[in-house]
Length: 394
Image (tube, rainbow, N blue to C red; front, side, top):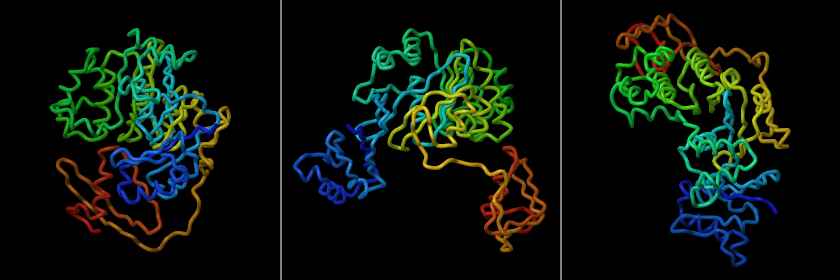
């Protein structure tokens, strides 16, 4: 029997006449059964009755997805957000002494998986009720995840979790950076960690006034200042420039020892390669379902991810490989000027920006490389006429 799920996004399907039209097209409904039905004004699909014809999905492709799950997937989901919503299968496994990475596209369940491990989200095993630790232990019987949840239940594992959206911190936390970090400093190592993460000079700043990169490092500091033996980082290098990414990666690597496990969600393949010992690839369909693969050595996992094919699982999760050319593909130089600048100067508070001169042509892709706080954003804002230069010509 085909294992099939239906995902319906009612936020994208608001027109009641269209919903009723979709219901009327369903062959199962036309035979007298309620495959597509309503609860209040929301449309739902009974997966046990769905025959996978795809008529409803073709009629509203932005809102309805009918998916035949891989034949090899015999297990039940570890979590489902609700009826006709996202499903997650399996979990990554923490290993003491190792930094474990999680790699996959957005919307595939990476954050959901680590929130479950971190105790932020209580899984429901695909049902309506939250699972107890005993149920989770039985669900993962015979696997390393069983041992993990047994230790969590026994209080032998304490978890510290850094969330993905550090930009939300100023909305929930007020006051100075130092005050926030003092509240969570269970190790009495604030000064030491602040120096390692290079945030000493912002400790007296208000949280609402610091940059995204500074917020990221403050969030990492707040995480590692807690006494824990399992540290979970969701995208720890976003907002950081390459120099800061390497420093943060080195720092995170030092956390893992025989008594401490570390898990990281990261999109930067170079940083992931440098930081982790093993990687779980996550695949599926974004916004619909996600599957956690078995762990692989970091280099192997990255190459497998680029190839788009999991040999051991016999699963092709992308219909093309990602290849990097040794040289950029050549193209004819453009002579059509898009914009140019000459001897630009701009003073922003204590910061001074200067750009001698240059030209950008149509059909070119131009990169701007430099550390955070060096004026890259201000420069492009000047080129885009968002802010005016004090001197020079555009």
